[in-house]
Length: 373
Image (tube, rainbow, N blue to C red; front, side):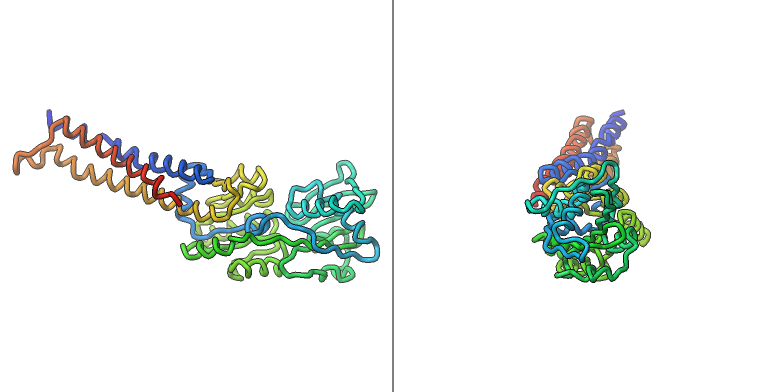
């Protein structure tokens, strides 16, 4: 009867039951103290296995605070009118580029303030926006989309070649059946983006960049960041971003997606791990598995480091729990009694069981120290 009691007490699966939950609890808590909002232990497990990370360009790898550097027009409108019409459309959009155009128009008191006619505004994610301003159909977006809406020729008075810098983005303005202007936008690369991508490569994670911008603009930014040419996917719509994620997953990759805008929401939800920048729009944060509350790119590295530490702690806890049972269960069953007469008492069995649970909890709590990055 005593041997049966010993086995019953020693076999209590407290340590085994605490091995994963305590590590996850401490890991998510350590992340929260460092500005990482992690939505569960399964997210940490998935993040620890990521081998490919996809970044949106605007607002993620760049500062997301673009500015207007040049406005070019044809003979139909002047620069002031072009910016005024574009701002009337873009004030209804939350995209950083739209915000830059509106701010430029507001900063110049010589630019007349126009408004879109009621219910005429329509935005096509990843392409542009349109509406009726002063009785005229106005289109603001990428060249292909504006050409499609206006039916204008690609020559368009050479406006599509008006770029000053290959790293700048050009937004085109269409009026009725003509492309009447182009607005060149500059956005700075985050100062620590290249170092972050370098560290990700060193840890075995391949960075990929997605962008709705043209190939030349995207390739120029990628060259500044050290991203390989074959890992740049340009000119994609929000649906195209989802397709890019699915293509990578179909090749057997575990994919994380980092984004900040409405256009990234679907891709964030589709990725194995969706990571949203804290300074982005609410919808991105709502669908993401991890939110970087500090809006700092190095927190991406912190996320993967924390996930690996948490999973290592779980493995250590499991090893301890199984090792404890493998050693103590035979002792509790009296395997040593025929040899040297040694055996466990119920009290000693209970003490060993309690010590095993305390060891697991202590190892989990040590994660707070190990995660002090």
